[in-house]
Length: 331
View 1 (cartoon, helix red, strand yellow):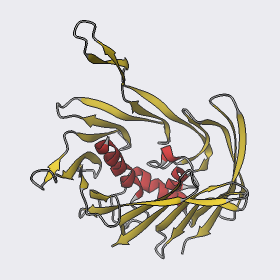
View 2 (cartoon, rainbow, N blue to C red; view 1 turned 30 degrees about the horizontal axis):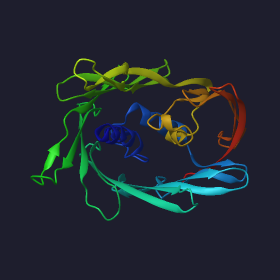
View 3 (cartoon, rainbow, N blue to C red; view 1 turned 60 degrees about the vertical axis):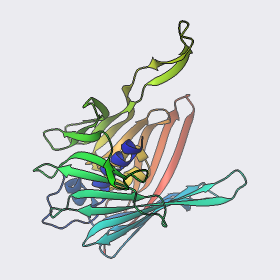
């Protein structure tokens, strides 16, 4: 579980670490699209009524410096999390996440974690060091490998063994990544110590290179029973592990994607992706179905300042809502 979490985080960072890249960098297709779509405006806020649910700050180089998330309704706003980015030589070199949780007595607690990012001479993210709080030392890191096209092909987790040698040890198994002919990632595959492979994520695209469906691996479900011969408990499989669809996206091909990677702040399952076109319907398994997404109140740069949602939940309950967006011009 630890390896999977950190390694999938590596993929997320691969897509989000470069907010403003040098012109001589070899861009991924997603980064090319983001540069074209963003134009002269930057997304800064998503609001319910007058209260923000997401707020983004930028530095003087138009790079994201702080992302704040709130649990807001029309009357009350509570900070639930903050992501802070630090830069060196134009690239993110440190990301600190702060989550604010409230216990049953109404008292708040802040959980802090950070990652330190290192790059090779081509700008590829090759190392991610992680620690749980500001006072601890680095105890784990991810090492990434790339092919000749600068595409991520492998992630391995290393941990500090404090029980015996106090040396860095490589976790058994690793993640590998597969791409289509357009260099868009299609599969994330887990490889165990016996070289057995399990597809953990599968991504389908349309002809415009937008992701249209994303599948995630559900681990097997187990239970225990008493062996009538030996009298011992034995574990058996209730349901085999399998890929399940977690999100489907339909697009309005007459509109560009206005939010860049920031759409993942509204739909977390999509944080790794950028789209060429504007989503018009997003279906999330186990949560809600956004039956329609309508964009309106466009500013002078052609960016919508209002997004309306109309849909229903899995149990058939109908819902509707409106999110107001704010943009600023690039400095």
